[in-house]
Image (tube, rainbow, N blue to C red; front, side, top):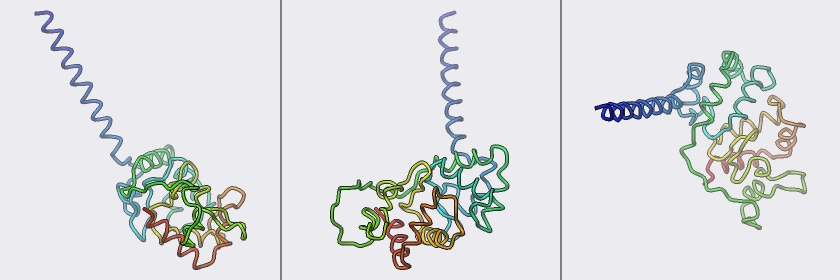
Length: 208
C-alpha cells in the first residue's frame, strides 16, 4: 500500500509540476500591464499598425529599451511616443522591452551574407549590401546585419513598414531624431537622395 501511495504522490507531483510549467510558459505570452498602452499602435504581437506604429517584433530588448529611454529623456522627439514612454515607470520599460523582443516577425527572411553577391544590377541592393564609398556611404548591412535582420542596438529593417523607415531616415536628416553614436545615422541619412530614401525603405520592407 505504501508503495502505491508513493507512486501516486509522485504522479501528482509530476502533473503539478507540468501544470506549473505550462502556466509559467503561458504567462510569458501575456502582455504585461505596462504594455497595454502599446497595443493600439503596435499590436498585441508587435506586428505594428500602419500608420500608427511600427513593427516591434524582431527588435532586440536592448534596442527597445534604449529607444524608450531616449523618448523619456527627449533625445528622440515624437509627439505621440514621448508621453507614452513617460507612463513606463519602475520596471515598466523592462516589462515592455522583454515582451515585445520575445515576439517573432511573421514574415520569414532568408539572410543573404555579405560576399554572396559580388555584383548587383539593382542600385538599391548595391547600396544596401556594398554602400557607395565614393560618397562615404557604408552598406546598410554593415550595422543592420545580413538582409537587415538587426541585432543588439541596431534595429531590424527587414519587414519593417516602408513608411516608417522613410520617416526615420527623414528624421535623421532633419535632426529631429538623435541618439546615434557619433552622429553615425545622421551622417549616413544626409548623404542619401530623396529617391534613395524611398528606394531603401521599400527594399527592406519587402525583402525576402
